[in-house]
Image (tube, rainbow, N blue to C red; front, side, top):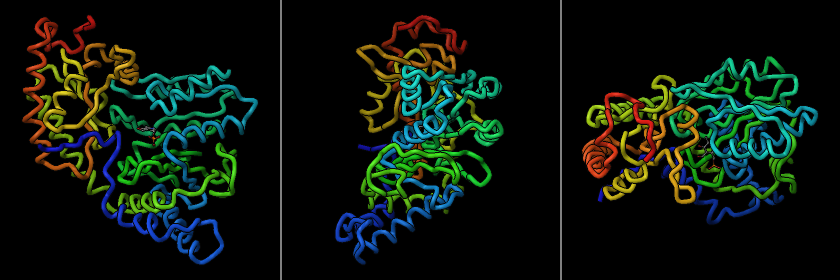
Length: 398
Ligand code: PLP
């Protein structure tokens, strides 16, 4: 059976060249990079090179890069460091559409006594920047705004936002887990204090993350222990994965533009084809400022989970905008924040492509998915009462 993987915002395949770079460090070159002998020196030298490659992709310096275990650890470390740096400030700001790594942390901090503002988005997933500006006060310790949304691919104007926040002397962090490797990032131009990302979203392994901390930013480590990462994150380095990530960043820097142009064409062909072939299909999120690899489409009158199961039968792997929690389907908080009607949010599917997708993959999805939706709609008594010419016309739940 064919295997069409279009769930690259969940995770990506490791590039063969990345794996090749890692293998010696999983075999013979196993020394602890902190040791003093030459055997260890070979490892620490390669770690330094990897750190430089990561920094190069961001327009940063090696000293500003801290390796962590994942994007979630980077996010948690950044926010904790910011609030510890300004203990008298009790207000923190984020958006309503963050990944749980930030959203749940902020909800947790709200229970610990911080005043939390969650900035809304409009129906197209665009951030209400005026609302953000109005929410800033002398009591604000940190503002954390994601660079690109994992579900819709909508890209926020981080350039503009970071300037505004920095002009008020407030710490600015961005969760760039979905942006790094997909769009060009230059931290020489963008005054973010901290930025998080994760290896497994850009064809490096899982279990390796990065926290960028701009020189001069007040910082307290989250993991306390050994002196690794210049005393900013304890724990023996995940050597092979760091070296793999260095390679992935080097490749991303070289190929970003040309690969993204190709991926964008494939994504656009998929989107156009599905909208043409399937009545009542609707794209969630603005089409302009969007990651080149992502499209989130609602298919009115059917449940996303059912679509996923049927696509799975044909070897097509994507994800849905609803999650089964305690036996009931909960539409995603992102689509709810955008005001997507309940029934459309329930029937949403995220397709996220990568450099490994081909024209053939898109043809295959365009062949298999329309009949799947038609069959599911046949089974849905509800669909027969829908007027698909009225987007968002449905108000009942099912
Ligand atoms: N932030 C965003 C926007 C993400 O998409 C993800 C993962 O999907 C994370 C944070 C968490 O990254 P990790 O899985 O490396 O902890």
